[in-house]
Amino acid sequence: MIRERFRQLYGEYPAAVYSAAGRVNLIGEHIDYCGGKVLPAALSLCCRVAVRPNGTNFLRISATDLEQTALIDLCRTEDYRDLRWWKYHAGVAHTLKQAGYVLVGCDLLFDCTVPFGSGLSSSAAIEVATAYALAKMGGNAIDKRELAVLCREAERGYCGVSCGIMDQFASANGKKGCAILLDCATLESEYIPIDLKDCVLVLADCNKPHSLLASKYNERIRETETAQSLLSRRLPIGCLAALQPYELEEYRRLLPAVIYRRARHVTSECMRVQRCVNALKAGDLSLFGELLNASHRSLRDDYEVTGFELDTLAEEAWERPECLGSRMTGAGFGGCTVSLVKRDGLEDFIARVGAGYLKKTGREASFYIAEIADGIIEEDA
Ligand code: GLA
Image (spheres, rainbow, N blue to C red):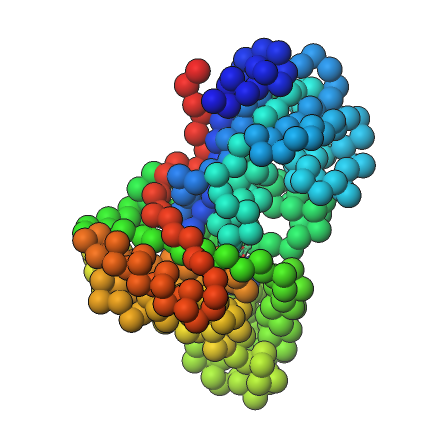
């Protein structure tokens, strides 16, 4: 379908079709910007892009769900920061150019199945798909880690959205059937095979626009920076994630109460990531589930990034006998929960959690089964 649409729009078939994945973070929430280890996985929900060089110095960009086409002059890539939809694409082009990549004019058509505003990283998927397509068409050598770093730079520097490296890294480097244990301080990573036996991962979108997201997200970043700088007077820690729980207790008096709780989330979440990796390696799914629950409680009570809708979804899931664990995933304040659910109780789970959520919030949740897929895919013609 995307190839046909491309031909209708631009007169020829695309030279290539690529896709970059959305992501679910299994555990390790709000610690990537503190230098912690996180455990995301790429999803089969993705952003596809059909592309063809057009012999000009312009990018012509369109999307299957939008009427308008944008024109980006490759000589003036810095000028598109105010565009609503297309600033991510322009920002990636600009950042790649600054980094010395050869860019050629192209026609591009995007088709994104990652729901927008769902906390499943639609923007990272768009950025990585754009970066990969442009880098390929320009004949550049591809390093997926570097692409992730450049995409994050585009989101921060060009689009003005603070974020850690997790989403772009997972989108670019995801591997089918595996989560990525990513050390955000060093960018070293390890694939952890995910064998869910008789369970599946269910994503539930609370369908609440997360309006507070940007301001609260930035506030949390500042709070963790404050924690680190106050503690650094006594402790030589390079990043907050390096802080051990016993050290936090020992120096607790240095921190105002709220800052202490933020730091406690960071240290406890770092421990949970390690325990979760061990549980997955040992095939202990009930421990994995318990860790999901503990992560949600910490994000709710210590980090305060959940909110009524996500808490309700998690609590409804915790009530269900077929559910081994459930937590919010992503930045929070809206978006999705991820739950570990027995396959044979799946229908009941969706029906009961959906009904309970509707009754308490007046909103319909959307459910997806998370399929863990490759990050970047080059589709066959
Ligand atoms: C957003 C950011 C990530 C990460 C998560 C929270 O998805 O883009 O870098 O900080 O929130 O874990």
